[in-house]
Length: 91
Image 1 (tube, rainbow, N blue to C red):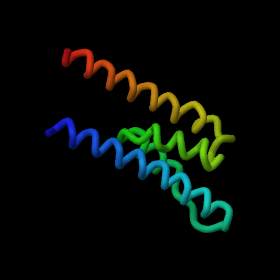
Image 2 (cartoon, rainbow, N blue to C red):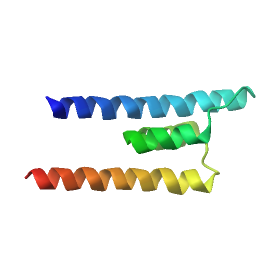
Image 3 (spheres, rainbow, N blue to C red):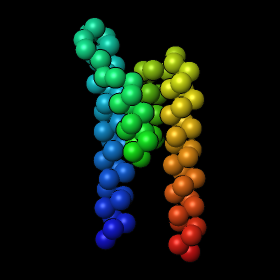
């Protein structure tokens, strides 16, 4: 049961990260108030790095910022490694 809650949370936070990137891209085009960059990194650290990264590539947003192009994939890699470690420790 607990595993399903974790999986649901990770799925939702990744969807949220993807949508957040799309909203910020829309706001950038319309010259509206923007979402703070700290919010993207917070969502990524909370387990949504895949969604934020997918949103970056899909919407072509924040791709010229080196700290996004290096930071978000680094967080994603760390999340994958931690997940693999926990899976391996359960075997």
